[in-house]
Image 1 (cartoon, rainbow, N blue to C red):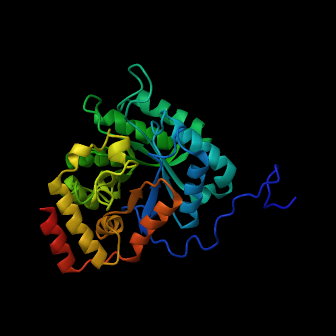
Image 2 (image 1 turned 180 degrees about the vertical axis):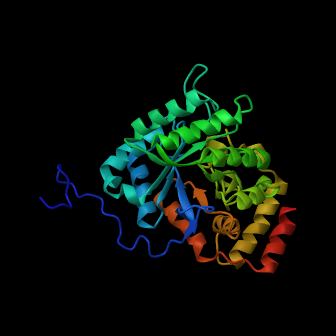
Image 3 (image 1 turned 120 degrees about the horizontal axis):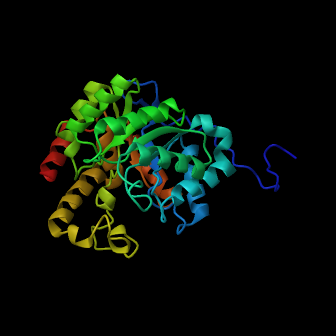
Length: 339
């Protein structure tokens, strides 16, 4: 039987030969690793309650368009662990021959299992969590392993030594942190540097509406040679035209309500979004595309982490890369609106 077909006779997935033609890749800090300007996050739409074939098609669409980085966490689902399990099944079916073309990341730091050892930043939790993640995904190692959030109770030295230990075990090639303040990031990078395992990357929440990283964090990352990958670039869907005419029944604010509530989207916010939308239209972009481009205008940002509910939505996000240039007039207008 042809190599194009599996044991069942079904045609195997073969990625497009042109997959690297249009994507740009940025160096992650002062490392040797390049990441695509857009990466795919598996936070939503990859759980057991979601459509498996749709998840599979999303990953194929991403890789076919040069997205080599898939970002997971131990508790992505629902239920916890489901995204990693589904990814593992899809990886085995479709992506195993292309493992060396992929950057696969996962995280631990939020609640995962009952009892005192399934949360935060202890060495006990981080190492056992990664062991479970590798088993669910059917991998020997991940490319990047993150501490998912700061732990105020565990000494930073313990958490960072766990990350160092994981690299020395060969279970991760690189390590990173997420949502650490500028001050704690500086401390963490210095500890890791002394241990001999540099911090590769920081994953902060960052978008036009949430700009905390501009208060010192980006400077620390630049000075320490650490990359940055921004999550929630569309502010949970606020930075789209979705809510300009009300609340669609299938929107996150209506369906979910955990991370975005309808009462957060008031008239003042809608006015700002509407004005930003007008600038985007004049730029020949959707508001979502402009929001992604606005983040990528800063060369300290290595990649933008996007989610998608279907391949068409992912392809729409990729069009942001067609226009990353902002005139000084554009930037001034955007700043005036955001103030």
